Structures are given as structure tokens and as C-alpha cells.
Length: 151
Image (cartoon, rainbow, N blue to C red; front, side, top):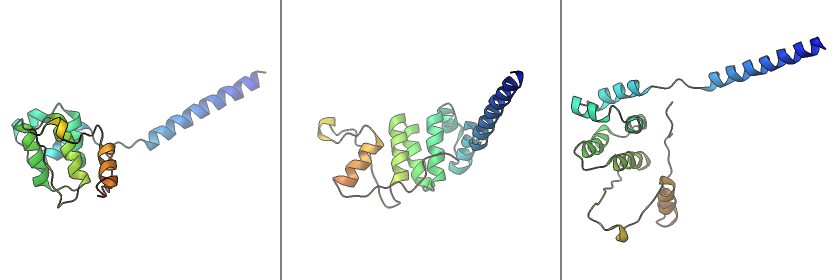
């Protein structure tokens, strides 16, 4: 009877150890927010005002990092970030514009029009709705060619 308990005990800890080792092996270390911020500072040549404004905003740092990683041209990224820093864009508009920059090609342009009435404009709650609309209704094929994860 004790040998059965020992075998079960051994099997339980073997399985537990295997699961733990497997999950740690599959986790990619990635970059922390501080490392991402340092990459942004170097790539975008950010000044201290810009750094202070975005340093505590992990979502902005991550989205900027993904945009750089996806090879969007630096002037386009800086233009969007500058609009945010000048309070022309809200945080949501900045995040949406960076995502759009990654999805659209180099020749495509878009702008937010604040003076347009919400009743006279299209409204999308998610990027998936936006992509589906453009793919289906306007016959424009927005397919994300870029990876939307941080490695």
C-alpha cells in the first residue's frame, strides 16, 4: 500500500514538475516596459517632455514599440505621437492611429476629423469591425501582414 502511495506521490510531482518546466520554456522573455521605452527614445529621438508624458502609459509604449517593430516609417510615428503630445489626439486616438499605421500601407493616409458630427460618420467599436467593413463594403483588402504581438 505504501508503495502505491509513493508511486502516486512520485507521479504527481513528476507531472507538476513537467508542467512547470514546459510553461517556463514556452514563455518568451520579451522586453519590459523600461527596455521598450529605451528603444523608443533611441528610435524616435524623444525629448524629456515626451518621455515624461508617455513613461507611465504602458499601452502607449507597447503600441509605439509594435509600430517601430513593424517597420512603420519614423516620421509617420512621430507625427502621430506629436499630435498626442500637443493634445490634438486623445490617448485612444493615438493608439488607434498607430494601429492603423501598422495596418495600412506606406502610401495610405487617414486623419481624424473632430468637426464631423458623429451622426454623419462611420463608427467602429473594434479594429475587427473596421477591417470587416473595408474588406466587405468598400472592397479594400486590409489584411494585417504584421505580427501584433511583442516577441
